[in-house]
Length: 225
Length: 117
Image (cartoon, rainbow over all chains, first blue to last red; front, side):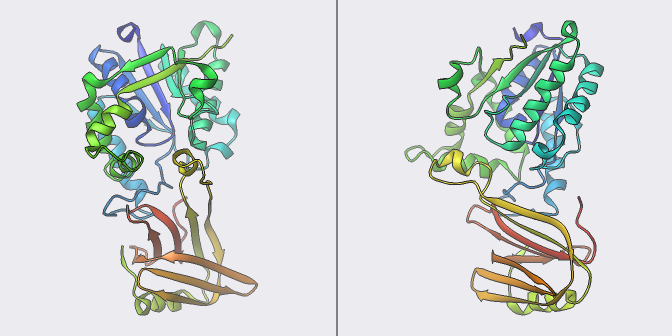
């Protein structure tokens, strides 16, 4: 499945969404020689994590996160395009305009697969908005040229609602690469990983928790019919 | 940023009073609050580059929690919970409050030049 793709485009709104959500899958594609492009919606300007101890502030955070994003994409060996939207505001942009923007890029790259968030089931409003625009962009394409779409759901109830995702990638074999990608997001990594630790009392090794929590990357193939 | 001392911040609030200034005001408990805790509510608000002029500003509080109020002609700007501050390269006054893990909970920033959109 992995090596049959021609070009994969990943569409998420924040620097680090690719790291936590799909860096194992991206690594598998790159190891199979498949080109990958990351379309990153925003620079995470409104993130709460400022490093721990804090080294960023509200005004400098976007510069740090831009560097981190570039570094993470170097680790992953993927092409990067920054789309220039602003963190927290994506859902207030015109859905049609964002979809047209994405469609233009997809028609240029002609990917065989698009990875994005599952609209309405991706917890963060920016995830939902970016996912909805990405799905809409592909829907607007000529049916014969449409790439497949893998949509990632993060909500607690997605299993109950949709059943098991049809794509479940075990990425434990490439987990070192996934951790390197996560750690490239220096201002965010500790805060996000720490949040996982808070919710698990008995385990203390953060890497072990990460591997357990992030060792699989799952997606639903979008049905356009 | 560094821990707030009232004297230092008050000096900057005085410097920026009675001028056209741009304000960034924000509070948030994060987009994942109710995802990690089903009893929590996601709350947040921000206003970026509100152009105001304040008659006087004052910082009050102690130890690691301070309140800042700016008195306007026809209203107020208020933030609670700031504990760190700095002047950026454009002499804008940045104040923020972080939790123990370094996550921003509240921010109030005042400058004579607009903040990056």
